Structure formats: C-alpha cells, structure tokens
Image 1: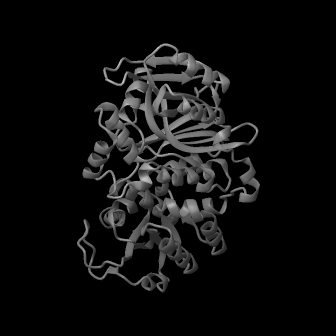
Image 2: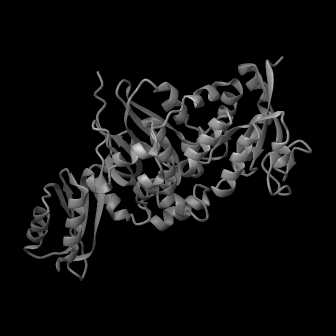
Amino acid sequence: MAEKTVKIAIVGFGTIGSGVAKILLEDADYIEAKTGIRLELARVVDIDTKSKRKVALPKGLLTDNLNSILEDKSIEIGVELVGGTKAAKDIQLKLLAGGKDVVTANKALLAEHGNELFTAAHKADKCIAFEASCAGGIPIISAIRTGLAANKIKAIYAIVNGTCNYILSNMTKKNMQFADALKQAQEKGYAEADPALDINGTDSAHKLAILASIAFGCEITPDDIYVEGIENIDTSDICYGREMGYTLKLLAIAQRADNGKIFLRVHPCFIPSDSALARVDGPFNAVSIFGNAAGQVMFYGRGAGMMPTASAIVADIIEVAMGNSKRLFKHLKLEPRNKVKNRISKIDELTSRFYIKLRALDKPGVFAQIGTVLAKNDISLSGVLQHEEHNTNNVVPVVVITHQTRQDKIAAAIKDLGKLDVVKDNPVCIRIVDIPEDNVE
C-alpha cells in the first residue's frame, strides 16, 4: 500500500503532455513500488478537447477549464506544458497562488521571467521544478544543483539544440547544404515548420541563461548572452575546417574568470575533432561542465522529444511529491541582478582564435596585402590553407587560422579585409574554441 497518494494536473496536452500522461497512467505501479508514493493523474486541461492524442485518457479527465484545477484543493502539483511565455506565465502564477507546486519544461519562460516566478513561488511557500527545461532527458539541472554542489563551476560547454546539431552533423558527414539539411530535419520531426528560434540560437540562449544562473548562482537573462545562429554556415567552411582538424558545432558557452567576470555566448564554432563534444552527432545533446573539485564531467543524451522530456518532467513530479524539490528550492540562492550585471563581459572583450576565409584574386602580392591588414590590427597567424579552384574569375579561397586575439581586433580586421580590391565577397569569420584540458589532480 502506498505511503501517500499525490494528485497531479497537467495543463497543456500536446506532444510532451501526452508523454507525461502516458508515464503517469502506465507506470504508476512501478513508480509506487520504487518510491512508496502513488502518483494519480487527476486532471488534464487543454483548449482543444476534441483532437485525438497519442495516449487515451480515462473518461472525464480532459477539460478546457483551468479553474477545475485551481479550485480542487486535493490537487497538489500542476504541470505547465503550454509553451510560450505570456499565457504560461499567467498559468504558473495562478497555480502557485492556488497552492500548487509547479513542474515545467518552459525554458523561454524561465529564462525571461524566472526571477519573478521564483519570487512568487517563495512567497507562496511552493516550489518550481524545471529539470526538463534545458536538455530533455538529460538530468543536468539536478546534477548542477546537487551532484556538483561542492564545486565552484568554472565553465560550461554545451550542445543543447538537437535541431542545429542534426543539421550540422549532416552538413559535415554528408556534405549537405544548409537548406537541404534543414529540410531533412523537418521531415524527420527534428525541426519545427518555423525553425527560427532553433537555428538563430535563441533556444540555446534560453537554456544557457538557466544553466548559467544555477551554475554560477546569479540572476542571468538572455540579454546577457551574445547569440549567433547557424543559418549562414556554408558547407565549404565545414570542409576546410575539417581539413585543418576541426569540427563545427553550435555551442552554448558560459565561463567564469578568476576575477569574477562572466562570459556568456551562443554561436557556431570550430572545436578540435578529437574532442568529446565533436563526436556528439544527430539530434543528441551534451553538456560538459568544469568544476574546481570534480574537474570535467560530461552529460550526454536525447535533448528533446516526447518521451525523453516526459521522463525529466515525471522525475520532477516524483521529487516534488517526495518533498525533495521543495527543500532544495528553498535554498536556491541567486545573486541579485543589480550586483551581477557589471560582471557580464561583452563579446568584444573575448579572446579567441579565429578561422577566416577569403575569396581572393589569384595573383602576386595578394597575401602580402592580407598580411598587412592583419598585422595592422595586431593579429598573427598560426595556419594557412589555400586550394586551387578552376573558375573563370581567377578567384581562390584562402583560409587562415589566427593565434589568440581579441574579438574587437578581429572585427576591425574583417572590416578592413572586406575593403581590399583583391578580396571578393564578404570574408567569413568563425571562432575556434579550445576546450580546456581536465587538469584537476
């Protein structure tokens, strides 16, 4: 017999909501045997009560009336899965005010309004659990908050968007152009009909804001994060990079320097092809974290999808039902925004190596002109690649790899290079990220 029964309501009965309902209905006995708690799905709310879903609900469970949850004191946990920010925020605030603990996978809402929601939850003496918000079935939030709690986290390097990783993997392995790889991702269900938030980096930035806030213990918003997407990546650059020992990935990166400065960025970048993150293919996600005590730890798995995300949501439901989430949430301490903002570094302050591709006239003196521009901006080279191209324009690609230099110097050099008469088309510039060695003893 169960130690206690906990009633749950789901708000939002789409793909993820269906997955959560499926686990709660089909695996309640198994969960009870492991935890001693009976999870009872008491209500499902959605504006669409007619469409057929992937899971059949018991009669009378589905309704379009949110008040049926708010007015039912026996329901202890509300699972918000409507997506977006405006309606979802209103729903979460109502659930908290109605005496419900909240479980959510809504990364955009937490990234943009998390501080307000957390304050409301503390005021109501309730908790918000959000494991599924960042990497689908990967338990990364609990890992940071509990498993790595003894560590001062120095850096996070993460692939947290499966759509982009699938596209770049196909561009790398099959020499597909971006448009074709995106189309295939949509056909396989890895990309939305409107993939803008994925391919422009916004989705990754939302997740990074949450991860960095928890890891660094401070209030971070998407406005703090420099963002570039993958929509302008050309397959030729991936091929040239691979020839020089690099693989292109869209990374979400958070770094904290010894002086307290914080760098937050999402952008495509080249990483060494023998690194672990370079081998993360298809729609999979991976998060590599560097702690001062544990060193490097890496988490890998499915970052999206009906059942992986539902797995994380139900794990949160169990933690809330057992009382673990509420105790942990009470001790969620984030340094206030007004004390953090001045420590967020701008992208111009970033020091990195860079890949630069130019399409230049094939004639004497061209490389001397390129070298003069780079030297004027205090940029030195560590590698050069040039391929012969058979065309009537006498134009060849020239690829250079720089030593470490500041972003603002590279930006000035790219502008100057674009003005050279011998350079045709706009120069391409992609950052190279050197993931640090794990040197903890």
